[in-house]
Amino acid sequence: QRRRDPLGRLLPGLVLVGSHVPLADRQLALLLQEPGCAAIEIPVAAVLQDLRAGAAADAAVDRDAGAPLERRLGLALASVLEAGRTPVLFTSRGELTCASAEERRRLGLALAALMARLAAALAPRLGYLISKGGITSHTLLAEGLDLEAVELQGQLMAGLSQVLTPADAPVARLPVVTFPGNLGDDDSLRQVWRLLEAVDGAPV
Image 1 (tube, rainbow, N blue to C red):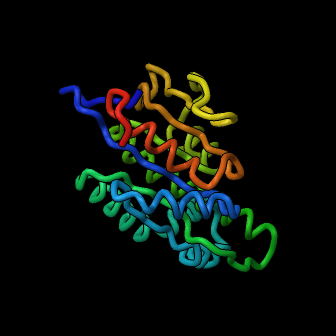
Image 2 (cartoon, rainbow, N blue to C red):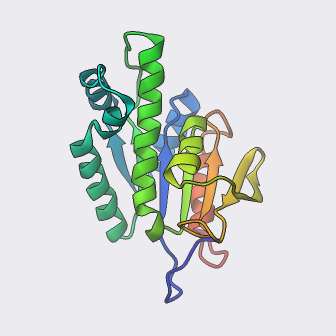
């Protein structure tokens, strides 16, 4: 169900991994072993530093924090797509100490929003999206793709939904797989990527 360009060519995909549970770490590590995938890491410490620098500012300024980082990540994503590989955008692994629960909450939302904006900027060029993590997926659909509703297409695996953006959405008929953080086994994320990369039923 990958989207195609006007000439009928399959469009590339994008994988987002925001979840930090141990299973997500293992799934990410296996996916990145695929030659067709390329890692692009969001440095969480840099995003936290931007948040702290703008702690006294309002939410609109917070949204603009880290613009140089966002530009660099956007260029890296575009470069991977142009090379014919699947960019895998993920937040740096490991725990980061926050000053408070509120700061941790704001950091999580800022990371999800950053990933959503980067994905939305590329969406017209994409054939599919895989989004791992509950907050990541919600923010991608509601804020990044600006969707009020999606079409449920079914499940690729138990508990793993594939949705489709509506025909009147800014990016129409884009398949999005929403992947909960604790779902599946170590190889599930790689299996889903291979399914979506398949051409006419032929595996990668």
